[in-house]
Image 1 (cartoon, rainbow, N blue to C red):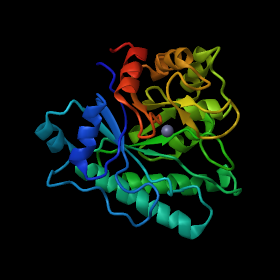
Image 2: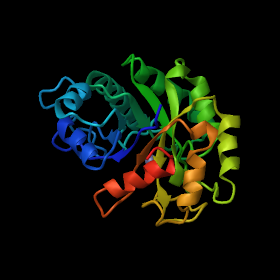
Image 3: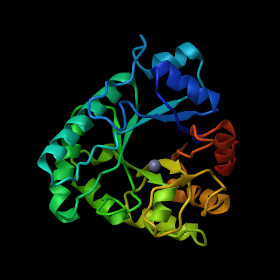
Image 4: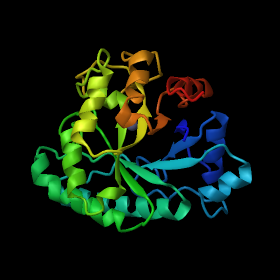
Length: 282
Ligand SMILES: [Zn+2]
């Protein structure tokens, strides 16, 4: 099967608008926020009279084949603060239930920050949150995203991500969304040896775990721990290393989603075209 390639698009206005924005940049996969990324209260995106994305894609003759949702940035299921943790679990559950109801195949989650409490101390709470969220839907997968490793953020190492996935009841519904910029910023400089970085994924995580890639170049250097995406080829990683990494075996089947800035409005058609050439499916 050809890999799907696309990008993050705004879902402002509703489902149909998100699909049309995907088509405008030539995307076969889109990522959206199914509720506001920076508000606890925001209503889910409008369905505009469609049962879900399947309907909207049929009605528009869209080339979009898969929709994933990025869970709100406010969610922190590693938080030792009881109120923040409980709110996070509630929003995560609501997000998975809503995604299931509108035909979103997977939700991408930043685990969050343990705020000094320690990863091991919060591990049980993290897996409890995931177990309770997965129970809200039969179809939606939960993809953990590797973090850039700022502060006490969880998930900048494959070992931590593997530990979390190992504690989840329905581990077969878990996946990894590998962000190429976060991996680099977290201290893995794969410019000279992309195969070695890919081999670590294969060694430390279950087979087939990488189910999406956030393909981003980096505004910052390795080890900076900063989450700063750059357009492909304009950053410190470069096209060659990125292309080599995402074509290595443990990543070679995963769909590719750009979260690059473009001209300020997110990934452009030329960026999606370039990404398609990088995975050899142009
Ligand atoms: Zn990302």
